[in-house]
Length: 155
Image 1 (cartoon, rainbow, N blue to C red):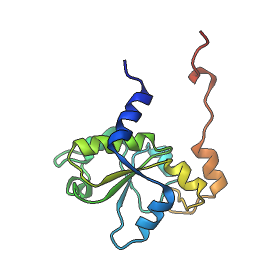
Image 2: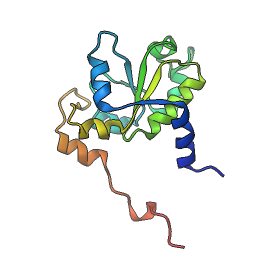
Image 3: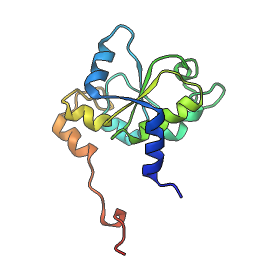
């Protein structure tokens, strides 16, 4: 039986990742990649990289195809376009990039360390209203502690 870590390791073997400082440079270039944030709506609203397209992981496959109520034309028409997927820590975006490659996307990357790493590198984040988010506030939102019921039971 495979576990989450196994799925991540398999995806990491197929998907290229980019570090926050490298992404910052790519975003400043004339041919900047499309940023796609695959987190849930409440996470995205708290803090995201300005200019990101919000496409929750749960609807990604539909967003990438024509003729669905979740279709995002920029994605459906962009299989050769440079795209960087973003999530909180870099895991959901890694799995999402793997799926997009299976769907025929040829220039898709995942942001290693996710929005947390972006914030740790002191790069700017904005909220749902486009207002800057303080880095310390973002850090607290991006690293929620595990609840006791989420921990592995003692053997």
